[in-house]
Image 1 (cartoon, rainbow, N blue to C red):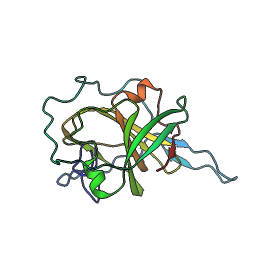
Image 2 (image 1 turned 135 degrees about the vertical axis):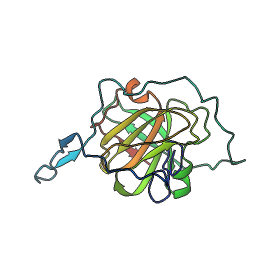
Image 3 (image 1 turned 120 degrees about the horizontal axis):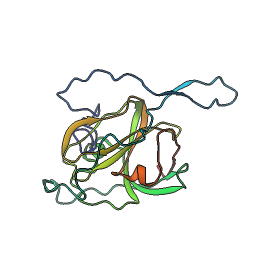
Image 4 (image 1 turned 180 degrees about the vertical axis):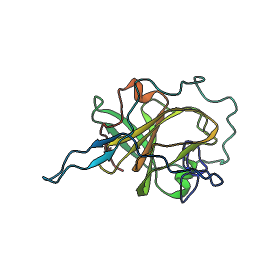
Length: 199
């Protein structure tokens, strides 16, 4: 995921493949945000969750072409929790990828991840972020989350070992990666809220 990453961001400065120019995606799914402190409501960008996922899983388990880890001792990241407050308070323990090299590596080379585990990518800038699945061996759901904890869009069932980019056309501050199918199994949809603990 990551900067030239697996389900990670493809580049340190901008999470997109370095040799590919991509036109800006149109903003879709504008919804009204809840007004705060008697302020006028403002349009908010949310990319709605479709009734059925656009992609289906090609296989269960890790990709057989998964390469060996390029590090003898993979880094250990600090952890926090993501609570899906609109989905029966489902809680996931996440590794926190906050530095450039952590986001660039992401979940690369992993061959298994428990259902209640994931990774959260923390960005300095609130903007649309693009990810890829370079050297990522397990399929993932990517949840794009805004400053206030609103899920602004979800990329479901992202395919393994894939250098295409995955994104939603809405700005976000965080991207949460969980196992493919997690969102459907637990009733998680765009527009819902999460609570971040220890992040």
